[in-house]
Image (cartoon, rainbow, N blue to C red; front, side, top):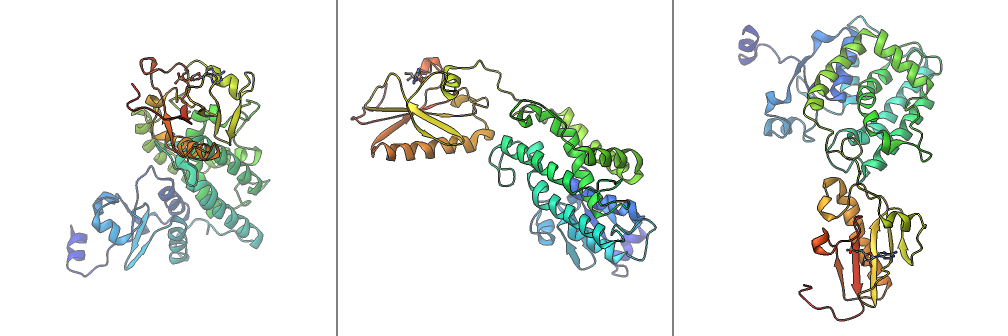
Length: 372
Ligand code: AMP
């Protein structure tokens, strides 16, 4: 009460406040450094709801990105997690009792710096593919592609980690550990759910963390009290997600394509020959064996991913559906069709006989309407 009265009376400045929720790996990075440096009492952690939530006018006036975390320190509003970390480390450099988080040797400091950049540039932007309901995930419009990129970037992180450890940049806990550890709590919790989508082409599941990251993860999550505390905080936020079935409808995690294979799989594998007119990484187009017009082409996604028909589409499929439409326009042009019809039959009663989504591109003669 006295604090509130002092603030209202303008006799005391507001305490430095970090607006964040426990389930964010970004805010967890800041909390981890505060715990490691023994600076917990220097920063008050509060929910963004105190400022009306991330979309609230007050919050947006302080952070126009509307994202967490946000640090309000006197007149300074700092966002972007790495900037918040560096602001706090510099401001409180002479306080606290833990490690500085900047390793002593230049080589180790640089190594730590590279890992932080690697995380923020290549891992952070796509990690939403593990829990967001729909794409895009960074620059990826498909969850499969984003997941495979995540695995690739973990392999790069493996190469960047110090071979002898126990921390990422060697003997000392650094900003690199504070950065990667909270994200790795997410990854180790969620990536196994997507094992089908990230299996290698040969089908082996394989370990997702190489020997360096495995040793680091084991040491940090078992022997580092501050890291253990942050992991528990994040998991307490993840548990309700688990209970609410957050992954149940998500492609490759809960939702899987369990419908029977169709003859289009054999056309895709070339077991059944077809007259292909167009092909790219995502789709195949071939002439219908039983044409209803001079031009009759079927356009199909290479990965069915549950799209037995258009009726099965979810937000996950937005990108591939758009891709098929654009491919159809290109194929029509290639076939010299300026007038054509694009049809998809959904369900037996509507004339569907193959349960792998396909667009019929029909043209080359006058087309009646309505089709009947
Ligand atoms: P729908 O009836 O809408 O499911 O469309 C399936 C289409 O696949 C039909 O127009 C068939 O003529 C066509 N089709 C079936 N077998 C083949 C095949 N081996 N090669 C090309 N088209 C085929």
